[in-house]
Length: 101
Length: 101
Image (cartoon, rainbow over all chains, first blue to last red; front, side, top):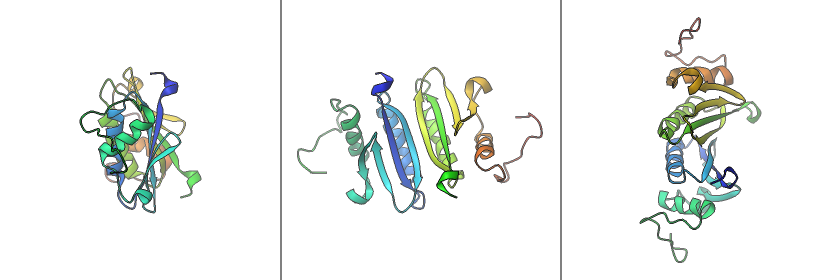
């Protein structure tokens, strides 16, 4: 895969809420699963209860809007939809037919 | 500390060498110790045995030049020298008087 087709991921987390470990774990999961698709992954310390995940210019998760944190399988599906939509993530990858979480 | 005075850290690691876990651990150490000084920390998957750490535009570690990996206490000293030179890192922070590692 060429450098140009690879992607940037950003994770913004609240330091006051102690979400670094959670964020770093998710970072490792994403960098492992999408080793060929992710060009760089940035951790952004923040405040005020922020927890957001971005792929390139798309915000794929906002704790405040979604009311919590994503399951890691769900987060990987959302990243996959941005970076490699045709790819299956294996046995845990059942796309909901509607808005079922 | 104002946004403008905060710093960016970059860690480049070789995926083929399986250095993600090591890099993510160092990332968490740096983000914990320098919570107020680091604005963003980026993990860059790479190849060819690369392991480099940058603070802003300064390369503070290169595995190929230094012949290995830094001890975490040494790495924190090198980051500290860039982001907060006056700060003591506590009991583990004994500055070598010469080039002693």
